[in-house]
Length: 123
Image (cartoon, rainbow, N blue to C red; front, side, top):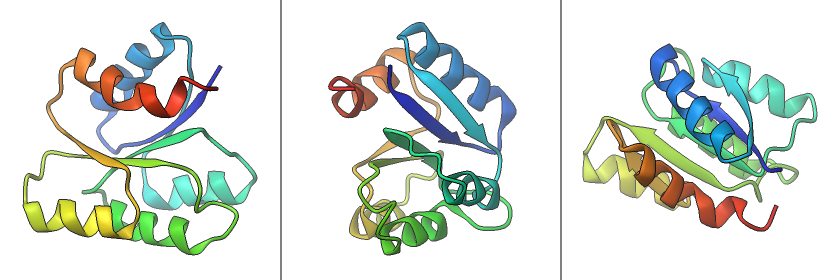
């Protein structure tokens, strides 16, 4: 069973992702802010994948991503960005920071599964 950390401030989207991924047999952890995600990771939680919203109150997703990739013990955790933002420069910035991909909201459940599966199949 793979573990996914979903960092998303919109409760309905967080719940939808949880349902989709749990149906596929994955364990889902959640955080509503960048700060709480970093706290969970600092406490030793090591998910197989992080789904990270870009636009959040407090520390935004790109700042969280930057902190993850600067931390040697966390930099190997794959991160896929989630956002309703379609601005190409923000997506490019996220990829340059180390994100493995980008899922635009709203998304179809099948698309979400297809995008995360390569990172979870071997676990």
